Image (cartoon, rainbow, N blue to C red; front, side):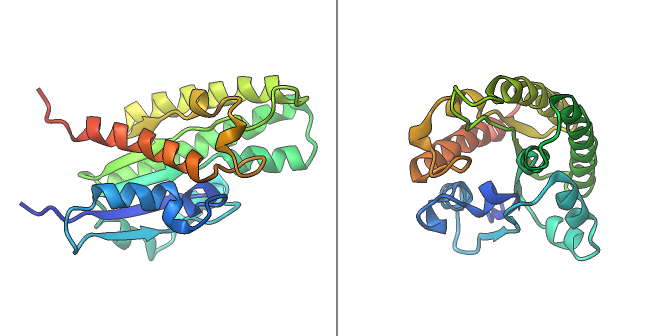
Length: 209
């Protein structure tokens, strides 16, 4: 039985490990260290800081990408946070975030469809969003409402595509000790993320009854 792991990490700054003291402390590097079983195992990180869901979708459509993805035994995805950060930076009205949500939903469906059509036997893990903001931030309640709605959609859509969903919302809510800055986890935060992924991976690897 081939026990080689070929792990591909896709997504934004959470995938690249922004906020960690070194890349070795990122959740992707930690995740790989646990799941790899032989020296022949491989890990490729295609994360890019600032990447939006639309840009991730475009990356997957690129003609060179599918061949690499077909080899993957494990894929992790972090996406969606920058869609909201960009909207916030443009000072859009609260009502205009509805458009951001709809675009993100559409992109996510295409992303998961693209990956599952080319990776029938791959374990794919999608992480939802969390609210890193302080409780007294003027948009905290709005952000919570939007993120809960998005995470519900992520979970529902993940089930439709047989993708494993990780929800970090409760884990990071009002936990400044897990953050390196206003958005990104520190080493401890990434270790917590790693545990969330590993717990889901262990469940995904259990034999079907």
